[in-house]
Image (cartoon, rainbow, N blue to C red; front, side, top):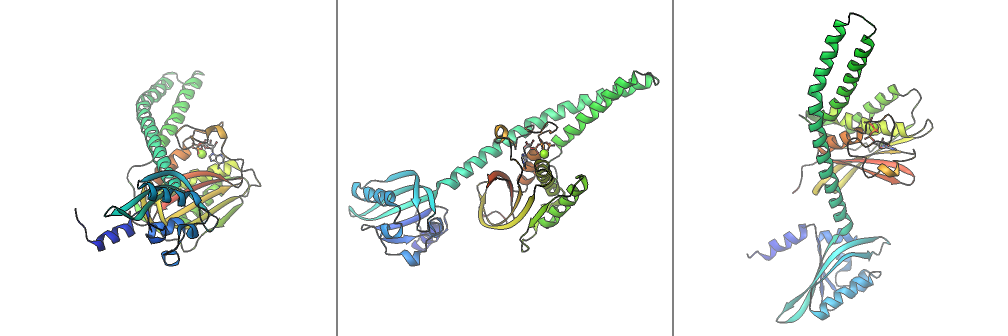
Length: 355
Ligand SMILES: Nc1ncnc2c1ncn2[C@@H]1O[C@H](COP(=O)(O)OP(=O)(O)OP(=O)(O)O)[C@@H](O)[C@H]1O
Ligand SMILES: [Mg+2]
């Protein structure tokens, strides 16, 4: 396959992998856009500089390039900690390949990816696969339970009629009530998904609607702090589904804080972001932050699975349903404990996928 130089340049400029080219004196010849972004450096400022001057804190990096040059071999390093000039550091997986012309080494090509974001993608994919499997088996089971449940309830009603108001109807009532309770639970397991009714949705309206609902069902005044980005664009989404998803997350936050706790609703635009292995130019990020005690340690890894609960009266379906609904919009929900606060973060893409 032969491609023109121009096209090769264009391709390298647009790939996700950072590419840096050094000459045999370890001076930088080229860096692509992914490289500039990863290292927070600009080609204009660092071109022609030696590696030690560009990344003074990254001695191991310079050594490995030198080794590759001397030994005339490719080297791979996983999880290399690169200290950047701005005191940040980044963990990268990288490959160094010496480049020969007429058996004389001319350059070293360095390819790098952010190991942290790669690990994050793998973690997200794992979470989604397991989550989907758990939901599917649960939904299958829910259907199986629903049919005999209808029969059970019908039979109890017939029996009740036969009992003609005797005190034994107390028992048929228990059967009917419990069958209803089970059916409600099963309906919650099955409902999410289905057909989406898309419209242009203002996420702040969704959040405000949910806050109204929560205020109506809470007997005391809630302390809700809005930290909204007013320039947030509308998104194409199923409004009802988003209301359901955010209701489940915000209700959990209300249940977690005590009366004098605080909930922060924060919205932000995220540019150039990767969600579930897909790159989006623009996405919306909503954080629901509370200062309650946090998710109990023993369930923290399973909170997005159905039936995982830390509350005596909980069914453990709220977050699993919310995750399914946000995922069906191409987004995802993450949880983290940050500065003594509980953060649930939903990311929803706005623009079309760019893959
Ligand atoms: N903001 C939060 N702070 C502390 N713990 C939380 C928070 N959100 C969720 N949790 C924990 O995660 C568990 C799972 O939440 P999820 O909403 O899925 O189920 P649930 O609230 O128990 O039941 P329900 O189906 O009624 O929502 C909760 O039981 C709770 O222990
Ligand atoms: Mg809940």
